[in-house]
Amino acid sequence: MTFTESIQTCFKKYAEFNGRATRSEFWWWALFVFLLSMVGQMISHNLASLLSIITLLPSIAVTARRLHDIGRSGWWQLVGLIPFIGWAVMIYWCVQDSTGPNEYDR
Image (cartoon, rainbow, N blue to C red):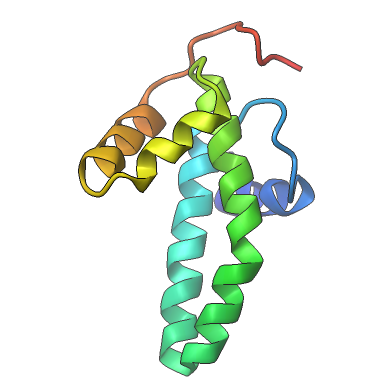
């Protein structure tokens, strides 16, 4: 999946928590959100805050779909709320390869 395909897919599935997301979809989306926030910060703090709010729900949704791709429930992303250890666990899970067919296929 390319950078633009990933962004289009994530906005099309704005609040879609079912299904799966590939590694490339997830990481291209993460890069897009990072770059968008950097540009927003350079322009205005208020713009950066607005962009963060706009991309929050699709970010949660793509993370849930990414966790589904490795056979975990989307609720596992709450582990990321634990500073440092939770972030490391989430990064580890998000870089893992797909598990193949599992209960989240749709």
